[in-house]
Figure 1 (cartoon, rainbow over the protein chains, first blue to last red):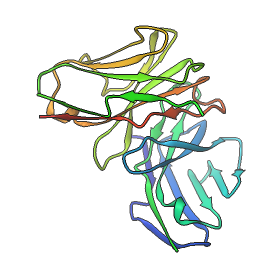
Figure 2 (figure 1 turned 135 degrees about the horizontal axis):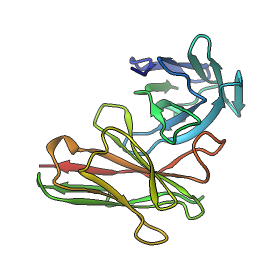
Figure 3 (figure 1 turned 180 degrees about the vertical axis):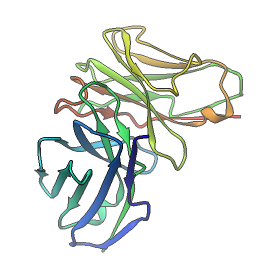
Figure 4 (figure 1 turned 30 degrees about the vertical axis):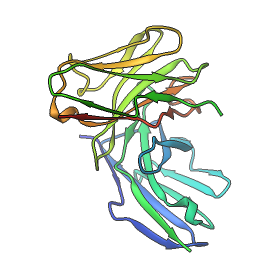
Length: 112
Length: 116
């Protein structure tokens, strides 16, 4: 069955450092991968989308990579700030469907 | 910035009762979705809706569930004869074009459904 795995343990980093979150998947050939941020009690908020033929995407302090051979995406937040503290979700989708298939998310805590 | 709005924010219902969750998607969006998130678990796809019909549904979306766009602005999820395991946060989302294009899905802040 399709599986999406994100670091189950919370990631604690110091302000100013780079946070790196991992998303691994098995039994899946996604056409694209999206990253969302979710704050407690709120809905997911879209951050970045990367397609299967793209290796890297950047947006301000965010960078995502997509390695279809390793079946892995890495999500980086550079110069992290306490306001970046949240749960980050990766979500995979295919061109033949409408659904997003989410991972369970990784909780990030940035301390001053 | 336009947003997806959901009402109510919290719904408490007795087991066996019917419940309707309401959503107002972003006005120029054409694709609508419902997801749920059981406490401590991942966000799970339920159904997508386009051009007044279901375009895709998951195994979770059985005969107990139905969706409707009763007018030009609202999008509803009805759960008939609720069960304890239906307790979850239900998210509505919308997108301008199909998922997979460079358009993201925009989520509301959810309705927390508690079945007693």
